[in-house]
Length: 224
Image 1 (spheres, helix red, strand yellow):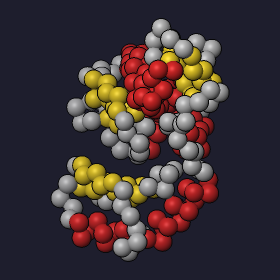
Image 2: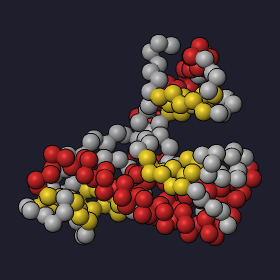
Image 3: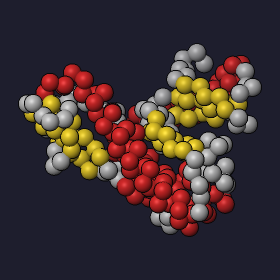
Image 4: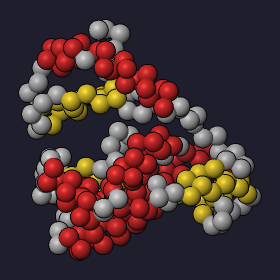
């Protein structure tokens, strides 16, 4: 049991303990606030075989992509398209997207931070636009949109109606982004993933399952 590494424990107002194995094999535990460490460890021990199988499946199905090196010709995703990187001298801005990603040579050492900042800005623009579009169609009011650095979830909806999305979601195709937006908007009034929840998703996006599958298969690529 001690061999099982728990990478993250998140405590919320949920009623049960859930184990989630990510595409990178990391184990996340979502637990009620009152759950003790002993209760969590007991569930992990009981599910140890399942955890091991899921982690092996992740390694086989989602081979890990190495970290970006920020060299000429390297590809970076934005809205489902891959754009090659060109490092240039004395650029007008540290990072710009046109037909290529153009990165100023003088800031290559800070490239990770610069790309993340760029993605966060674009994510705020794109997701605000998509949330506005779908919330108006659905007659829903959204109080706030947050862009996060989450690695294990594509979106979340707080009890107060705040929607949160990871900046890396903006790397996905727009239709996949739309699926995540619809999913979280419906959570404003459908808190659980019951049949009624999925029925409402299907009304807004009849082919949502193929976009959910795209995320499951390609989600590990949406990172730096």
